[in-house]
Amino acid sequence: MSAVTIDTGGVPNAVTAFRIAAIAEAVSWTGLLVGMVFKYLVVGNDIGVTVFGPIHGGLFLLYLGVTALVYRPLGWSIRTRVLAVVASVPPLGTLVFERWAWRTGRLSGNARVSVAQAVTRLRRRTRRGARSAQRRRP
Image 1 (cartoon, one colour):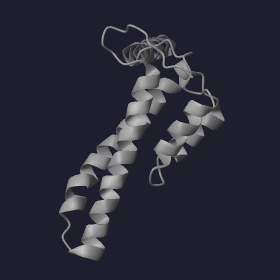
Image 2 (cartoon, rainbow, N blue to C red):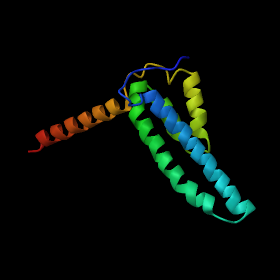
Image 3 (cartoon, rainbow, N blue to C red):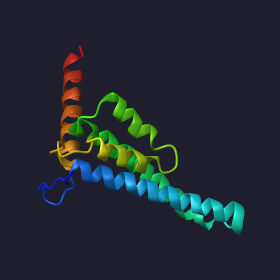
Image 4 (spheres, helix red, strand yellow):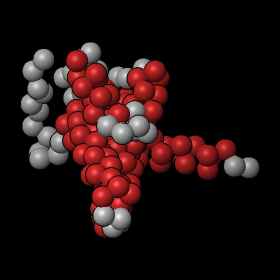
């Protein structure tokens, strides 16, 4: 499959954002695992866990956030969404999911929406929901 090239004014499209988040989360998992090996098996020093723990935590949340933003533009089924979230739990699961999603066409060029556009759409839906809730109040 060929990569999608869409001019989004410097904002990554949904596919690129998801792939970056998935790979970054997997790399941070690897760093955390190496830190744990050094802490418990090699030197007893927890510097690796101290450094990679918060990095991995932040990238884990980023991955979940990007997944929540891009599933609609990518047209994912409920099964694919659940697999994407479950893949964030085991070490390197996001990398395995990203490779699988790429091979099976779930990260195809159908995502013509940038991450910024997805956030804007989400905000509009949220505002619309708030306005309709205000109208329903007696």
